[in-house]
Length: 406
Image 1 (spheres, one colour):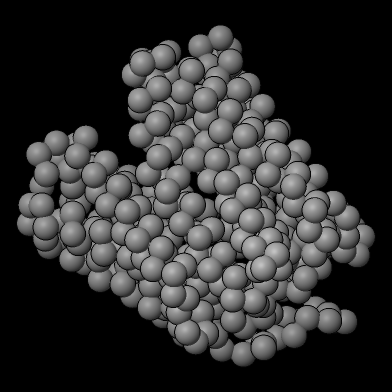
Image 2: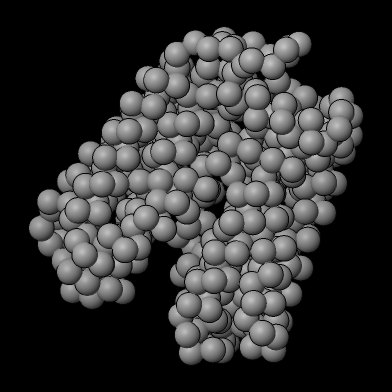
């Protein structure tokens, strides 16, 4: 009885930490947008702060992952990084309106370096807490925290900003991230979650992480597919306010579309958590990508409120796709490099999403339909990348111990 109960108890404690930190992270973006506009009267200020956080997150992932794998106590690395991220968010809140905007953006850049702890940093530690069938459900539940956070974070930011002010909303976001620190510290109670890999030079370890992604066929295929797919998802998110204005009666109703994506993703992963899918997760990465592409194409043509159903279909594909990505990363990652591979792959995915959002900016103003069709085209490209990236080839570095394929 005790042996079956304890893994679930540890898992729920883990999920409490991930949910709190990810809700705080999802709350930070909208809160900074509101704070920048409230203090300076210019929407570009908040956008610059948010861009600083996002860009730094994409850069900091590989380094943070290497630190996790090198440390004999990855729980401490994760906890300290979460605390540093929370302090960084508070520093940004204190700087906006009191220091020049470029200085505030630099502080946001520094804070963003710690963001990978919220995503891949947590997930890379999950296999050390639970194993076997519980791990499959754990990945599905872990993916659900992303969807739940994307629902709760922006709503909480709007509510706190409306009642207590935008600066307070940023501070509350930091507090949520800080709430996850005790949960990260509790990982030390699970010996399998402790790291302590070979202490090679940091830059060589970062290079080895990229090499592992490139040379392991299934891992390369899943990573490339997700990066290209998330470029399309970034375009879809930018289209949502315009779709709300043109088809639902107002730009603010674009938030309903984003919520529909999150709700559908939450439901899909909830079903996976109750009944884990059979077979290899690789095929589910491809299937989820194709469902997302169909959703975008349908949204381009759907009239009125049918757009809501079309966009929600994308969430039904995105949720299982993310769960399958976690499973592939776990299966293909050497234990001594798991943290680095999880955080590096997540950073690449964030970079793809940011690139898609940047591409959609000028396109959506001209034609939201064309923008959505191009986003659907990215999903087709992601599916093609799944096939092409699965071909066998070998990393040319001499003396490498990594295999070219499984």
